[in-house]
Image 1 (tube, rainbow, N blue to C red):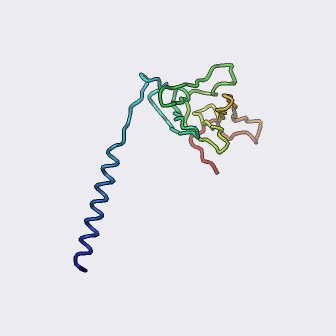
Image 2: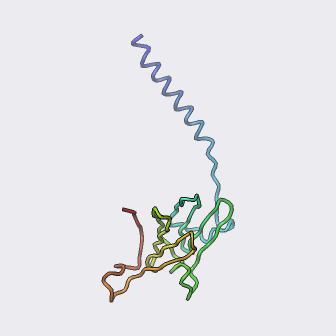
Length: 142
């Protein structure tokens, strides 16, 4: 019996591995590009929000995907209720639901999905309390 135990353990592990492999084979992937509404093919960051929407930071705007179509948020010059820049590098959603948007050289934005409003933060050389740079490459939540 002692000689059979390692063989039984091996056979059980092999069967379990084959079963888990079969489950993974059922994963379905889809490809989305500009033809399906993504604003740009270079995606810098991806995030899923608390409601299940997928957000894509691209070099040509912020993209929200609801599983069917994209909604693109782009800078509109003179409109404070748009992103500060189209070249977006990183995304983070805080516990309250607010989405933080780090841009290539436009500073830091927040977007409130509930109100649809943007707020902007940028480096001001005359204000030591402002951002140290307008280049936001990554963010983490503490």
